[in-house]
Each structure stands twice: as C-alpha cells, then as structure tokens.
Image 1 (cartoon, rainbow, N blue to C red):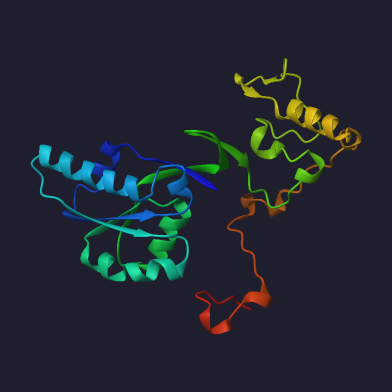
Image 2: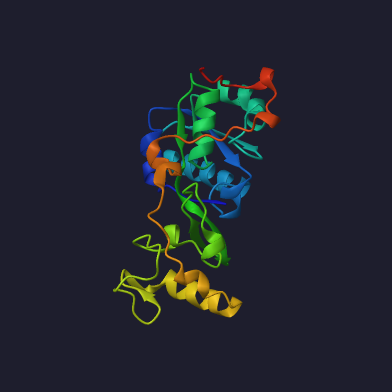
Length: 232
C-alpha cells in the first residue's frame, strides 16, 4: 500500500487562502487504511478548515466528496459536477491520485492535502513501515522476502556494512539491520547458500531514475478506451 500523512493544517490554510469554496475529496484506498485520507479524515479536515477560517473571520465554504480510488479515471469521473462547483480541490489522496485528478480536471487547481511517504504496510496499530523501493527489478526471492533496497540505509546487496552492530543499523539503534534479518530468515529456511552467491551491481535502468516508468500489457488494452496514445 502507499503510505501518506496529512499536511499540517496551517500549511493547508495557507495553500487555500485565496479561495472561498473548497471541495475536499477523500480516497477510500491506501490512504484510508493509514488513516490519512479516508471518509472520516476528509470530514475532519473540512470541519477543521471551516473552524480555523471562522476564527480568522474568513469566509469559507467546504464541500466533501468521497471516491473509492482517485488514481483511476472511472472513479473520479463522477466527481465532475462537484469539481466544477468548487473554486479549488483539496485532495486527500496520495500523489498518484492528486496527479490523476489534475490530469482529469486540468482547468481546476488540485492541491494535495497529504504528504506521500513510501510503499509499505501496517506492522502494528498506528505504525506503518516502508518495505518496498519500487526499483522495478525485484530480488526478494534471494533475500528471504526482505528488501535491502528499501530497508538498508546504503542499499547494500551483499550483506551488511561495517557499521552494523548487534543486529542494528548504524543510522539508528532503533532500526534493525535488514541483512541481519535476512541472515536469520534464510538460516531458518535452510537457504544460507543464497548469501554465498555474490549479487552483481544493481541494474538501476528499471528504477525511477530513468524518468517516469510505464508498463504496457497489449493483451489487456481496449484501443478506443486509451486516454493516452503512444507515439510511434
């Protein structure tokens, strides 16, 4: 899932200070799971902005709307009427959802209400942990299902660095050394031989440093429905 957290209210008030009619759009997917942009958070944010505006003697109207996902056209198309009626849209989706809204409604300013941080999972109540760096060339099959790209401060590919001590990362004693975890996981599986094989230098051409990435499945494409056409 994509992990995000809400921007400070003060920042959001500053970003929207020129507008009197704000549409706050919630997202029922990842950001709902991490309690940043779901239905409850959307309603709370809208109410908080109204109260803050009232305290500043500022005229402000907020309207709330929810969609299952802001990152897909079919889910944001029904928002058209609400978007048109607003001066500005405050999106509580991740950065992908904000960009999808901005692409669908290019004539309307779409402001992010959240800061998107990472891809990960909930590890306990109220705690979310980054687990995947989205490098485009997954090596989890040889590292016991633990990602050294996202979870090692130096993205080491062949074991821990010299700064790792007692199973902890040199960056912080609160951070587990992922290579210590990988060793223990593979040992428990009887697969320590995987650590003997040297990993070659990482091929980063599949990572995001080469620009915006795209996956095309020709077998799934309905030509007339494609919002973008590839240049030949």
